[in-house]
Every structure is written in structure tokens, then in C-alpha cells.
Amino acid sequence: MLTRTELKVLQAHRDYPSVSIIARTHRTAPTNKQDPIKVKNLVRQAIKRLQSEFKKREVEAVVRNLQELVKNIEWKHTLDGLALFAGKGHSSAVSLPFKVRSRAVVDETFATRDLVYTYNRAVPYRVLVLGHTVSLHDAWTDVMEEHGKPFPLIHGGPGGGSKLPGGQGINRSGIRDDAIRAFFRSVDDAFASVQRVNPLPLVVAGVERNIAFFQEVTSHASVITGLLAGNHEGKSPSELGKVVWPIFDAAATGKRTHALIDLDSAVDANRHASGLDQVWRAAVAGKVKTLLVEKDFHQAADLSEDGTKLLDFTGKGAAALDDVVDEVIERVMENGGAVFFYSPDDLQVHQKIAAVLVK
Image (cartoon, rainbow, N blue to C red; front, top):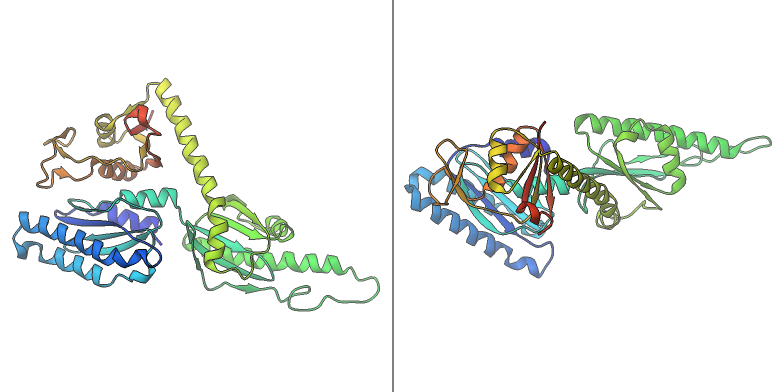
């Protein structure tokens, strides 16, 4: 799963030529049988572009890294998209849980806009499944992986692995409740050890009684973004993903809606940029607080000598950007700005891309 650190490493890469292969793939047979052919065709397209601009020995390392990436793809385990990144001293592959537009890009930077979209629309999160056995899952959209140690944890106390005490005057329900609270405190401590390494949002799943007890004792209420009531112990990762992802996605939808409201306010205050030319200048100047862009908006262009203006695309040299929108996204994120993606025509009045500017 893609981490913020890995994304930043890819965005910080600067070296011409750098190759990005973005490919539509498939999760299941028989549709995934053509994926290797399509990816290799994109790779051939990129190599042809490289060898038209450079001597073979000048791009030998890039081509070798690219071909090695293809050789190591596990075709049986692809998702909806695949991104390959190759430079002279870099090679990496990322599976994407969303459909993408297939393309081969040769540029000074890697084409990370699909990764940014994935990271913003499909923020990594965790799922804690409460029960007598508590499991923790790392999640990305509906893709779930069991986290591993220190999970799973098993409730071995009264009402769990051991029997409740009997006898006259014994408050069995009180003992059971105290035991489950103590167990969930230990669960919360274990979760804290995971969060310290890589803090992520959390969805809590379990019967309502267990959710209530966990909320009572947890010190992580601020990271809980959703609750899923019901008995989900024993569900496979794929089964769990199908019911959890809609709950987490609803929270992300709320953030995108709020960004649109902020844009409307910025328009009224004359503190916005609309259209690619205006947004590019604002991004270069480091003035973008929030970028809003339609997911499928792409535009090729050359940069002027000082880098502030967009010119007709020539397709040659480091000044020729295969996708200016991708470059805008990278610059905004480098300067600490937020990025949100929208469906086609959602930003039609802003020519597919807009920005809320810093005050």
C-alpha cells in the first residue's frame, strides 16, 4: 500500500528522462489475461520515445530498470491500475485500486497524479474488528490485509476464554463487563503501538455492545472515522472490504464537498484561480492553499524559459510536460497545499481546474 513518504519520494524525483507507465489492469480472469500485453506495449512505446531522443547507451539504465519492473509484476494479484516508475537510479511499482487512463510518459518528473488521486480518494486506513478475537486490518479502498503482530488479540478473561464465577451474590454481568473493558484497554494499547509507527484513520467494526465498550475506554477517539455495527469476526478480507469501504468513503466525500464550499467562498472574496493558465501561475508562485481538479483532466504543454507560462507542446526536452496538471498537483503538495479530485464536468465553470489561494 502506498504511504505518504513513498509518494513524496516519487514526487521529489527530478531527472530527465524519467519514465512513467500508467496502465489499466484487472483483478480477475479472464479480463486480466490481456494485461501483460498492454503493459508491454506501453513499455515499447516509452522505449521508442527514449531512443528517438537519446543514444541507446545514454538511456540503458532507464530501459533496464523499466524492463526489470515488468519482469517482476505478479499478474495474478493486480488491482484496477498499475503504475511503473523508472529512472537512471530509481525503479518502483504501485498497484492502484482505481481505473486509470493508460499511457506512457517521458518527462523530468514521474507522473504521480494517479497516485495522488489514490492517496486522496483512497486514503490508507485501518479496520479494527472487535469480538472475543480482535483483529486489525490495513486497508486501501476495499483491499484489506491483516496487520499481524501484536494482533490478533484473544479475550482470555471472564466471559471470554475463561468462565464467569458463580455463587450467590456474584454480579456475573458486572464481572463480564469489567473484563471486556480491561481487554479492550489492552487492545487500545496494542493499537497505539501500531499508530506510533504510522498513524492512520480507523474504522471500528463489531456488535453495538462491543463498540460502546471500546469507545468508553479508547484514547483514539479522534482517529475513528466510521463505525460498522454487526458481527464481523471471521469474515475474509475481501468480505470485510466490501462492507467497510463505503463507510470510510463517505467521510472522504464529505471533505471533497467542503472543499467546493470553500471554493465558492474564495470566488466571492476574489481569492481564487480558474483555468490551467491561472492555476499554473499560482502554483509556481506557491499561492495555492487548495487545488480542485477533475480526475480525467490532462493537458500537455511546454514551459516558457522562466517557467511561469504554458506554451504549445513540442514533445521534446525537459521543458515539454506530458501532463501539466500532474506538475501542478506536485507543486501544490510540495508547498503543503491540499488536493481534491472530482468527476467530469463538476468543475466545468472553472475549466476543469481551480484553486483556493492563500490569504
